[in-house]
Length: 68
Image 1 (cartoon, helix red, strand yellow):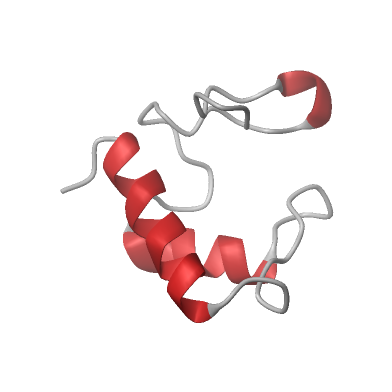
Image 2: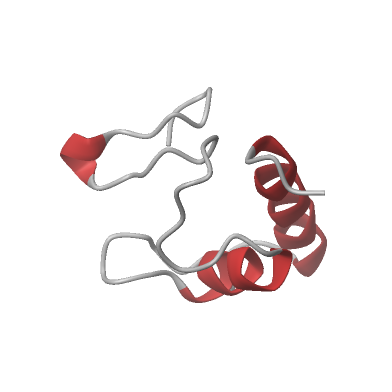
């Protein structure tokens, strides 16, 4: 998604800073996408990152997309 979270369509990485979400923009949906991956493009990070890191990423992505 790049350092700014703006995405890269060439590799299937969507913009994480806008309000256009395909699979849900709430924290639970974001968490699930990080843990389990999505559609063969987004890798699953559940076995590679600690639960604390995944929680921090979830909060960060949610906040940058305008979540409360």
